[in-house]
Structures are given as C-alpha cells and as structure tokens.
Amino acid sequence: MQEAQFANGRGSDAGQAAGPVTGGAPMRVAFTHISRRRWAGGYNYQSNLFAALARFRPGEFAPTLFAGKRDDADELAGPAAIAGVEVVQSAAFDGQAGLIEALTLGIDRTAAEAFRAHRIDAVFESARFFGWRLPRPAVAWIPDLQHLALPHMFTTAGRWRREIGFRVQMASGRTIMLSSESAHRDFRTYYPRAGNDVCVVRFATQPPAAFLNTDPSEVIATYGLPESYFYLPNQFYRHKNHQLVVDALTILKERGANVVVCASGSTEDRREPGYYEQVNAQVRERGLDAHFRHVGTIPLSHVYALLRASTALINPSRFEGWSTTVEEAKSFGVPMILSDLDVHKEQTDGAARYFGVNDPVALADHLMQVSQQARGLVVRNVVPHQDDSVRAFAASFAATMRRAAGQEISEPVAR
Image 1 (cartoon, rainbow, N blue to C red):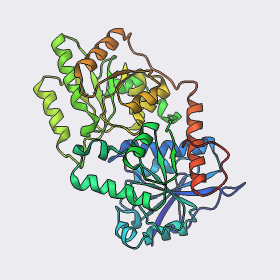
Image 2: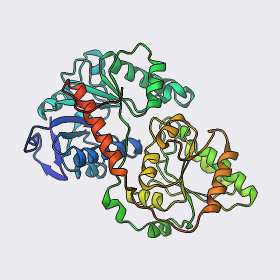
Image 3: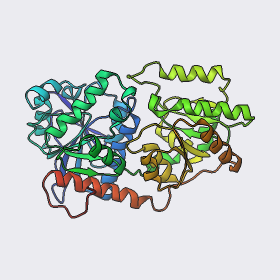
Image 4: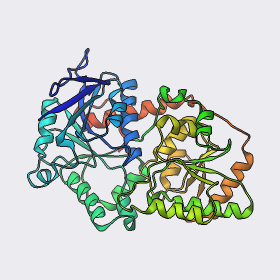
C-alpha cells in the first residue's frame, strides 16, 4: 500500500511512520479527513481540535489524519501545519472503500492495516465505520441526529445510511461522543436502550493568530460591502434556513430599511443540488440583490475578518448539534441573532437575540433594531477568557479518549 505522509507541513518517505514525541509516549489517535468543501463545520472542528490539543495538551496526543489519495492537498496543508499532527494519504481512505468489509466481515482490513503500520492506539470515527472487530478502542463522534428530528430534509437512502451507520457504531460498543447536552437529550430520546458510554465534549475555538493579520477593511472592500452588514457564514443546506433570511429582508425592504446580509459558504448540497439556485432566484425576483450578498466559499482568513467586523452574526438554522459559527462569534464577542434552538441557548447562555425558525417578522425586527444601534465599523479581537474555553474543550476530549482506551481519568467527563 503506497502512502504519502506529512508531519507539520513536511513530507516524509512513503510508509515511514513518524516516531513518538520525546519525553513520553503520546496516544496516537487516528482521524479521517473531512472535506471543507463538503462540510466546512467538520473540517474546522478537527482543525481547531488539533490546535487545542497542541496548545493545551502538548505531547499527550499524536493526531494522525488519514486522507485519500484524491483529497485536496490545499485542505490537507492546514492540519499538516499544526504542531504534532501527521497526515497520511492512502487509497484505503478514498471514499468508503472498506465499508462493505466493515459491515460484512467486521473489519475494514486496509484501514486496519494502515492503523497498525502507523502504530495507532485509538481511532476517532466521524462518518466512518471500521468494523466491530477493529482491534483498537474507538470513539464515534455523532455531531447531531438531524435525520431523526428533520427526516423530510433527507432522502430515504440518506436517512437510512446515517441511521444504520450510527446503529452499527452503537452495536459495536463504541464510546459515543456528542457535542452538547441538547444532542445528549436527543440521543437518549431516540436510543433509550443504548448501553454505550456517552460523553459530551463541547467544542470551543481559538482563532489562529495568522488568520487575524488580515485587515477587515480590505476584505470588506474586496467584496463591496458597506461598513454595517450582518454575517451569515452557513453552507447552503436547506436546514440552514437561508430562505427565512430572504423573507426577513423582503419585510425590511417593504419597511424602507436598508439592511445588508453577507452570506458565505459552499453552495453544494448533495441531498438537494438545486437549493442554492432556488434561494438565489427568490433574491433576484424580490429585488434583494443589494441586500443579500453571497460571496461564495472564501478563505478562512476572510471569514474571520468579516465575522470580526460584522454588526452581528446570524444563524437561522433549523437544527444544530453544536454550531461552529456561534463558537467563532463567541470567541470575538460578536453580537448574535440566532434561531431559538435549545442548543443555541445552551451555547450562548441566553446572551443573544432569538427568533423562531418560521418567524421572518421576528428576525426582521431584530435586524432593524440592531442595525439602528450600529455605530460604524468596529473590529473585534479575541475575548480575554477564550483560552479557558478552549482549554476545557481539549481536556474534555482528552478525558474521553483515555476513558475509551480504559486508561485512568484525572479529569471529569460530562456523562
């Protein structure tokens, strides 16, 4: 099996695993690459997790990111540049090549061999299943149970694919990792007989210093935005509820209010390929081109620049496991206007404005009130207490992995 391997941004010989960190043997944890193009939140989650472990648990873990030969080299360069992270590219991780083996024989043999060759101690499964006979402890991350809460948002095949995937992980005795107490309540509601060990690990983000060097004023000028704008950095999935924002802007236009929403993110949704075109058609038909600006998939440095200078973040989503965009806004102290999901209230401790997922009038009222209070361009920096949140995230993840591996736990783990 030919492999390409990178550690901290440097290439190494194919098939040659990196040695342990000096001063102790770190736990070598296998992760699989999440494409930013397909799921920006998942990509950012793993990158932030690697950075948090490097900063607050140095030498304790050696994250090894397994990717396919066809995966985007530019996407892999980001994680590879984080201290302690090793990236291994192998055809075994192109698509779901070993899934049939994992389901029928109980093990994805090519993936298991890659884990053995790279001395993996534990596996972090995200939208992957490597079989119930995998000879290593595994933690299965279930980001959310949207397919059960909003089944109409999925094709029948897509819904069953997720459900079977989660159920085989549970049946295999995986430690289940969830991202919120809201998700934990959902899990107990939908799977009351599950006997798995369940841990809640709340995500927090520490924006990379390199991304904060970009001048927000220049980015705002690049995209032709006014000084005062609201930011909506969600991919165009139907459950992200962009249509509600278009409806709210229609109401504001009728009121004579000049409010601008800047949206960024991928327009690709494999479940509903034409959704972006539907929303964009509504924007054009209602004459909202000047009010709803979609700038596409943009560099992360631009995302942070637009977020830091925005009047407020908007997240109108109908469902979240734990919102990455909310965490990023919290890290800068950006005001937030959010759908009234339990998880949004859990994330913000009530310190945001909320509206119903089907209530464009309430959203319009919030946008008008906040825009009237805006006083020119304000660029925010990372809030002082953010290190504490990220440290707690890293500690909770570390305790979850050690718990799954049957090692002594020195710190409490939720649930």
